[in-house]
Amino acid sequence: MDHLLFELPKPIIFAHRGASAYAPENTLASFELAVKQGAPAIELDVKLTSDGEIVVIHDPTTERTCGVRGTIKTMPLSQIKELDAGSHFDSAFKGEKIPALQEVFDSVRGKILINVEITNYTTPLDDLPKRVAELVKKNDLQHWVFFSSFNFIALRRIKKLLPEVPIGFLTEEGNRGKFARSCFFEWLNYQAIHPHYHDVNSWMVQHHHHKNRLINVYTVNQKEEFKKLNQLKVDGIFTDDPILAQQILNE
Ligand code: G3P
Ligand code: MG
Image: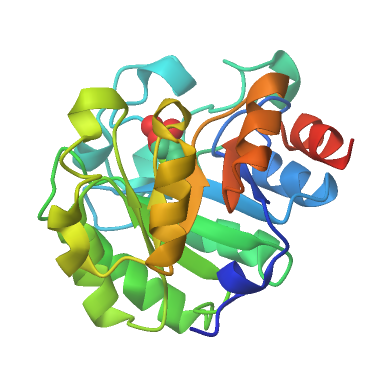
């Protein structure tokens, strides 16, 4: 498969929710900083608003990152745009907004690989996969974007719409992710597995490489873990701190 995901040097450092150790997660500030810091890839979380727009936010609600109560799926984009998604991190980022996915595309296109996590976990059958596929197509970003999700139905749907774009299957940590990590999901035809770093071992890496899949591991912020995963020859590492990751891997 011809795609940027397979062309970048390994392990690929994914700035998780942007450079989220240095700027508020899932904001233009954190994505632009990841580009400045030289990260080869970013990860971001998308959801649908009540009026069908795609916004970038991790939680289904606004309380943690915006300090006010609200549920994304019941709010129109105009209301979401009134919120301050920066101050919770640092007053220097006051006024930073929850971005629409289109704004992220406009700001980083052509500069970095974009892993779009389809996070319709509270509305697993909504139109998010279709809407994201349409937007990627409209922006002609099939080479620069790939998808991931814990929701295999969403992955299946988006893969049908954009077969040339790889999908990464996210698996939950420990026992909760055991079934997802089993051979039952061979039918999903995923090009990468995204396990929690606690679940990764040498056998697992070899198994997925043998199946011609990448193994991208979330979310690592400690020195020793970067080293261990690098030795295990994983293909990608999600981290809040791309600077630290690159420093350790260059040692
Ligand atoms: O995609 C890796 C990671 O982001 C998955 O977990 O909860 O941080 O979206 P979460
Ligand atoms: Mg995520």
